[in-house]
Image 1 (cartoon, rainbow, N blue to C red):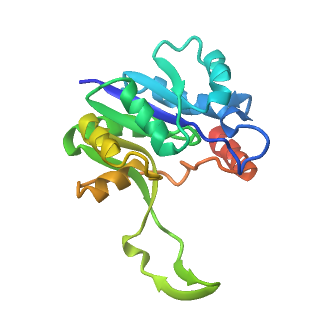
Image 2 (cartoon, rainbow, N blue to C red):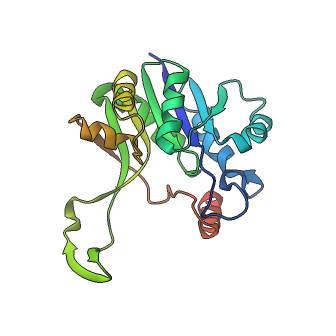
Image 3 (cartoon, rainbow, N blue to C red):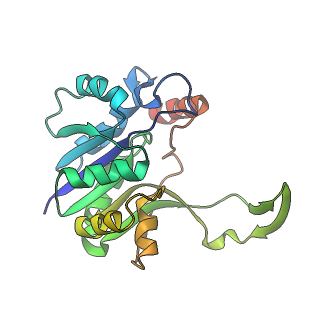
Length: 216
């Protein structure tokens, strides 16, 4: 059974600054390279990077000696980028991950690869630890019970045919994570406990935090 990884890298890093965050270096190594290296030594068979067209040539240089990496053009939205990756090659299972989460571990990827064969759909998540408030027009409306709340991360892993069907059904929408599509189709998505270190690089301050984590 084949397992492909789809790495989303199609964003324009508008909140990061004048450089694509995936090409920012942490301790001399690009963010995207940390991410891909975690998958390179995992149980996935192929890594498909769905990239913003503006960085495709640079990515080709970074990964020119990686024999299991292919780089394709992403879409205008995250959802479109993943759909491009799904259409690139059929497989049995797919692990989808944000390119901007460089602290993902090979261990959690391998657990996803095994677990998805049993449950068909899963998302790495962490328990919400902050107190959550519902706010309207600048005023607190109520405090939400956090006992059942989790923060969504990636990787997310799916049976290929199941997630492809969801993308075909919701083509043209703007889902921010793939598990949400299956939820709206009434499919069961299971959770896998993740790490609070598995941050997503969004701003310059996230780079500083990632430096600390990656040095440990």
